[in-house]
Image (cartoon, rainbow, N blue to C red; front, top):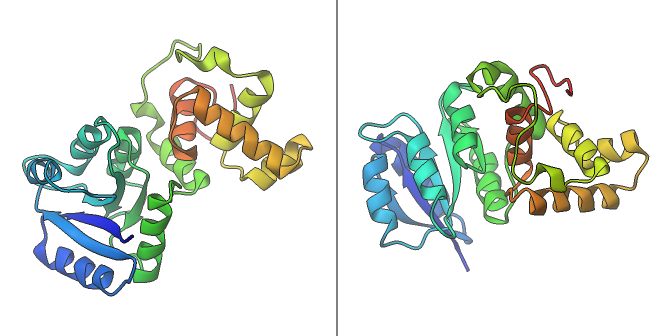
Length: 224
């Protein structure tokens, strides 16, 4: 079955270019398009979409708020944020809103296609280290937790799971965490899966964002 993609961008030429690239792929099809967030939400009500390529700077309703509303729905499509500048605040806000990752608009076609396939399969396409750099830059935007981590399910984590969560938030891969904690990579993967389940998170990107929000990791990657 083809990956059903929706293009949301106020620039018609960009949508045309993306459409041409996707149309050449045997496993993808563009099933919907919109020129702004309001139109996107309306179109989505009548379209079956797997992945949304979402611009952020649009009239009427920007991509961040549109992403937030999409991700609040039951069984929403995955959202891949498209930004003009690396590390801008829109990418940060898009991740917090529920996007599965972000890409630059001038990304090579092959990388864009790989990102769409990764997001569709349930992975995040932003490396944890990149997400951490985003959060380090925009940490002042995060709400204060009064020095104490606050999350309704954080107490469900074991000491080892909390330790793994901090290392994930510091940008370490499963292999690097395994080496640091003297565990097998399979064991680390199991711990990450349990963290996602217990905290009701979708992917590693959300783990990184939450770790910053609750104060487990501070700007610069240090743990609290």
